[in-house]
Length: 157
Image (cartoon, rainbow, N blue to C red):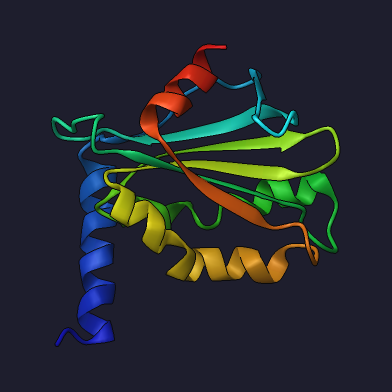
């Protein structure tokens, strides 16, 4: 059985390997784009973090969409604080992309692309998700997993 120390060092190794190899980047391609979601809410892209995958088949990928309002702090502060979980995401071998979006109603939305549906399903068990859950205003957090083709259609519109 792996110890927490072994898991920590494995994550650190993955993080630095990805960062130093140039496989991690922030794309500006979608920044500013307004996405219309199936619940009719509109979200503007503020940041897009990508990890270049090694010949990843898009058929096996899944997308995890999370919406919530932060409690307590203003939107501008939360935009800055939203960057803190990025190293933890980069350190996950199954993480491919996160798009940060915000609505006019001050809802945040994270759109995460994972290498498999199983990885997307496990995300609510993660340390990062638990922190977001604690920082969200009561009753505002919701999430769903969608197939990759719906995500690609959403980005095209």
